[in-house]
Image (cartoon, rainbow, N blue to C red; front, side):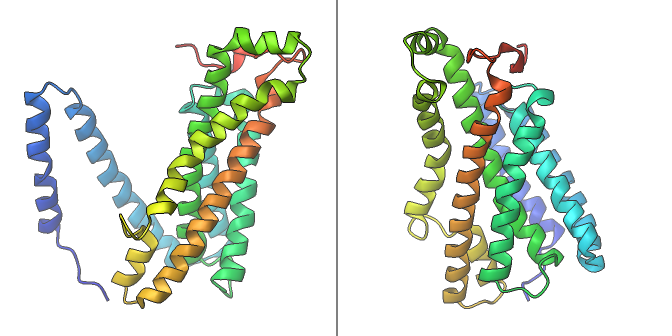
Length: 262
């Protein structure tokens, strides 16, 4: 059992923000307001999450657990679209499918075949693991969608010229597809390449703090990293592929109606 963290200790950690705020003021880096708002939001959101997760874990009803996971998927899908400066309505269903499908498949594989849990819908497995997968897929989809559609928008003349010269739609999109996928998965690849050398990752650290043997924690971390990369990769591929029906006109030109007016 880990020692309880006192409120006074958390307040001490908050004091670390004071020199950061002071430095920002001196160099006129105008992020103090954003820093304070983000900090307050983080605290309030985590308190709220802690309260209802305690309730969900105690109740541990399969329907409630699955419903909560689906809510997480919906929120992640919506945030992926909005953070990519794209309109929610035309792209919501394609992105929802692209996020949900890899998540659920890989979550089932991880919990049943890797962790070997008896109850697939048990709260302490489905929610934390699902959250780790979703968090990484969210970042990947934002980078991929933004890079893909903004890249074509900024390079529209060359893209249209390629179509006019007789290239198929797939051929014209391939360079932008490659670039977007690479940008989206590079952070995960970098993390995988340096994990254990530069940092001790979350799942491994959590299990060690909880009393697990380091070798057991390492096995779980290897499994979750491979699960994260796979879920992220397939989600990106599906997002870019399925959203094309809404992102382009029947004449293979970019549909400007999907972009938010800025």
